[in-house]
Image 1 (cartoon, rainbow, N blue to C red):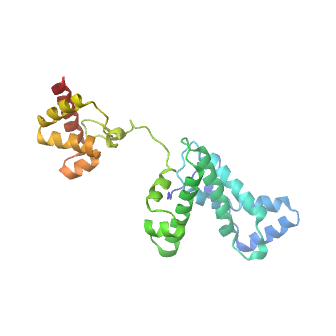
Image 2 (image 1 turned 60 degrees about the horizontal axis):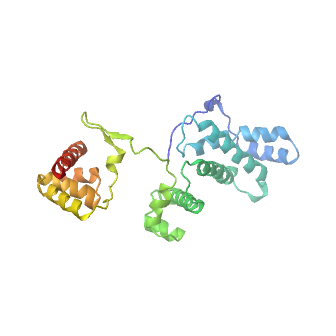
Image 3 (image 1 turned 30 degrees about the vertical axis):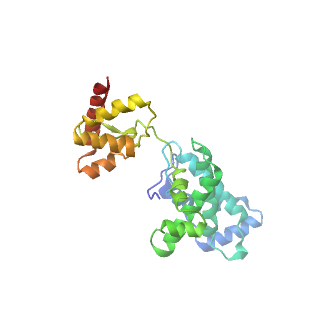
Length: 257
């Protein structure tokens, strides 16, 4: 969840009006009787509701205005379909329509296509987590989420990951004044297939490495550990792991020539 002030270009959000329950009721009655002005006032008087929902999403300066307008579409749908006779608070009803429009926009604009069913489950997970937190004041465990939604626990992380925006593997993530560590360095490297002769040469080269170099190469390229995991295991910085790995690879290249 993101909880921050949302600024909309061209709109002074601090001056937006809010309506009392009595004013809302009067305006809804007037709108049902054909007053367009009443509907306009209902929209203007609930724009802060749209802003409050936008705070929960990760938006950028480039798309905040678009997301606000999409949220307003949900607000208008809520106003058009709200039934006073049901004795339900308008904001309670409107939140679902506004959030639904925004979530649909995020889903449709994701650069990498993920199956709709996976994303639908991700949104259900988020909705349940929010409902649970509002009720109990804490996040539900994965087992509770899985039981509630009838899914396997392992699928929770997978589904939520489908909502994240992709980033370049060359994105720098750490620099202590020495070698820069990139996202690529954090990704476990699968073991490539080699012919028997090459494997024998590699094994001989590994045996000639220093013990720490050999451990890091084995852990990174055979087991598939990340540099972060190794830095914690060896009690050294991530930059040190990166430098040792780089040196070890250079030594291996030299030894197999």
